[in-house]
Image (cartoon, rainbow, N blue to C red; front, side, top):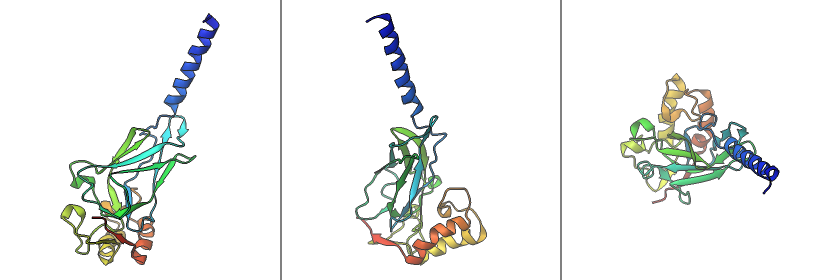
Length: 204
């Protein structure tokens, strides 16, 4: 190989390596809110994957529910777990519609319940929020809840969420959009599943 060809090959290698590095998901630039689960599977959960070069399209985003958290979540029949995958669109956004119930605050567990990866890079560890936060007795999953054969957004959930929405006091499980506030935005998200009474069969 001549010197010219060698230089061209080296330059191409550097270019490929640089492009690969620039497309690597950056945890500091990506947006990863707490995971949203809901018996109707209607409330969308979105992760935005960004690299130093901008949004990462066609990235595989994986939500891994930890062994500690997996049996605490109420899963709708047909909902895969502990790994739940989606692919980002052209804007770097992966959209999930997860059928399930129960709220898991990371402070109530030994570690955050969900690890979020993009193309194998861990972006963040987060909690789980849900319109169906509690069972009919008002108990959270970490309080030995018993949702029975159906997961449902019921009166007990409305009773659970309403005080924080009225007062503005922060409650992790009511902060549906992970902005650190409990306000009108969360009420708008919670109202449809509470009003409709979203329900699914609880997988054994």
